[in-house]
Length: 203
Image (cartoon, rainbow, N blue to C red):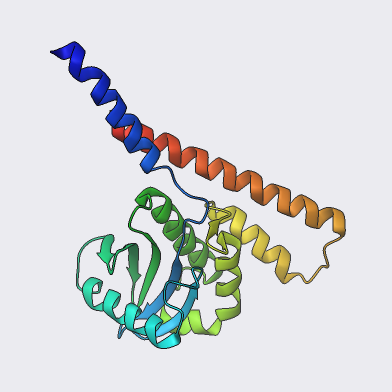
């Protein structure tokens, strides 16, 4: 009987790994709310998800109502997988599809939070964030581009934000190198996530 069940089990495990394979477009949205649920920053990368401002704000309000008093880091709202973190009077959210790997989303959230902690000099609260909103947008854009995760290392994010803030124009060669580096980092992040998924299923 063992010989008959092993192939099926192996086939099922292989199918599970395949179904959990992370897609390139991992992040559906990122938003930061204050402790009343009001939007301070948001970026939606899937234009078909919530196409209008009203739909986006209704979704954010729904997410906030279900998470701001919960003692968790992951929520499932309206068919979306959401990881979140709070700091003083701010709530940070990263949204993925229902099939998205939570480790990938959490890596984005942690990178965002730690990067902002550095540019805000540990004052991760509403007033300081609003005073440095341009820098916050730069951080988000260095971590995610069109839903694709580019970076998960806060130190690398801060270096690139500082580089862009210097207002030094990029040459064509450095632009090409910048794109190559980002693609390589995306590939490394994806590979790491695949290994984590396989290990969590097989152990």
